[in-house]
Image (cartoon, rainbow, N blue to C red):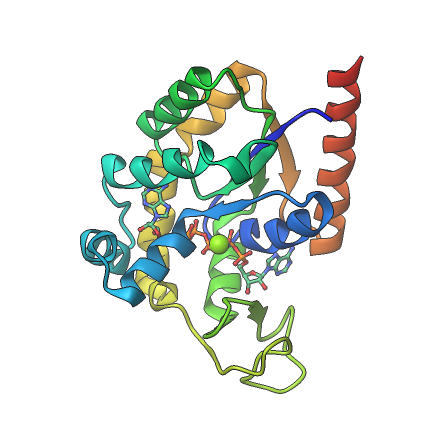
Length: 224
Ligand code: AP5
Ligand code: MG
């Protein structure tokens, strides 16, 4: 079977993590979410966490060299031999260049960049209501996807809390950063012919259905 080397691209709160959880079940691929990796590093107070914390608290991007190191190592690992899902990377043109260079060096290429799009007002509504479990990062929304027991995770029972960077002012800044630094990647991947667009304002299962249909078509095309 051909490799699936996938990127999830989109504004904060568009549903990248929500879709990734479904795609991981569907395709059994390793999942590398740079935001999750960095938050874990901050929690562990590792060297990487120390480098990243102040940028993340402000809603700024961490420097390209810091994050590229983290990702290239994983893409070049044994578990990612048959493919990977990257969520939140690349986020700048230099990061995209690093990834393409690394893949080229391994004789591989991107299968698709999946753009999940949502307007700013929707992002603000989603992030103000997002709740995340302390143990495993399972994600809920107080209105759109509430847990059965308010304040506690359905899967592991751990308490739910808000992400530090989901505070209103920080969300506003994260959106500005997305428009200035990450949006140019849309055109970049369009030119490369690997961009696939999805309407992130649809219900999660509907977005998942569209993504699966697109990936099935891509695989058929590769096998022809
Ligand atoms: P990161 O963790 O990647 O944050 P983000 O890109 O801002 O995206 P989010 O995780 O907030 O949103 P999401 O799209 O995953 O949405 P979700 O599925 O949770 O990055 C955090 C920080 O790390 C950055 O600011 C930066 O500092 C640093 N960083 C990370 N990568 C970096 C890089 N490459 N370079 C430099 N710095 C980097 O959904 C959101 C909410 O909406 C949830 O409540 C969910 O339940 C709900 N929801 C989801 N889908 C739907 C739907 N279809 N309908 C209704 N509700 C929905
Ligand atoms: Mg996420």
